[in-house]
Amino acid sequence: MHSSERRWVTLLTASTSSFDAVAADIAYEVRCDLGWPRVVRGHTELMDQFLGDIGSIRLRSADGLIVNKADNGRVVEIEYGVHGTILATGSKYENRFCSIIELENRKIVR
Image 1 (tube, helix red, strand yellow):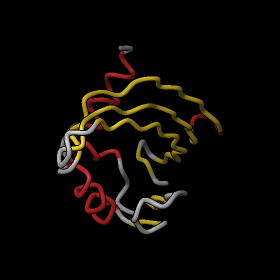
Image 2: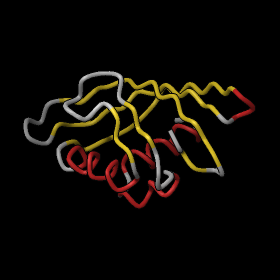
Image 3: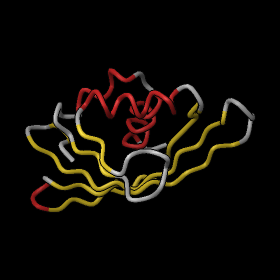
């Protein structure tokens, strides 16, 4: 696993304190139906949304990281796969994500 992939595994499997990189006034937009609101505003509200998933899925690894930068690094597009186990059923959890991240002052703002 490449070192950047290891960092994503650490971020994805760590406690919510790892989300220090998220700005207090973040606007987190979801483009597909996850049962979440389409826009979650604020660090606390976003962490509350993730807490439900943290207890239901044990993440094992992340891989296939692709990073593209734009706007002098202010906008970063990342693609990665995540693998784990759904705790309630023991079924495999396999997902691929594409995220577009906007950065300000070394924090994720959107």
